[in-house]
Image 1 (spheres, helix red, strand yellow):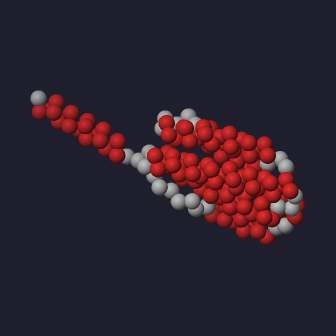
Image 2: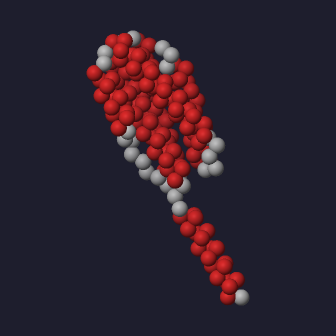
Length: 158
């Protein structure tokens, strides 16, 4: 009888520990998504200001505005799953911003469009995987944002 209670106690403690364990996949998804949104807002702002062609300036504004909306959604999703994540940019994006800041004219336009296209293609793949997450909040966040990323890929061919 004591062994039965010991087994039940160990099972309950294990279940409680599992409940307390953070969803590392959700945290990683939201961290990457929010950082990507922050990056896109900065890059879009830069393109809206420095773009040589009107198409690139308009695309930059679209990117900036779209990601202002999605960062709010991602931040809420992160909070709903128990995370607070800052809107910082990765070193890769900081380097790209510095690179773009030195370019002008067609060189700027080409670099911006190519970077955004590659970035959004990677993001679409990540969001498609996240849309299948067992975490319902993560899946819903990914499904809600996927159309925005796919629309930007279509617009990146300016």
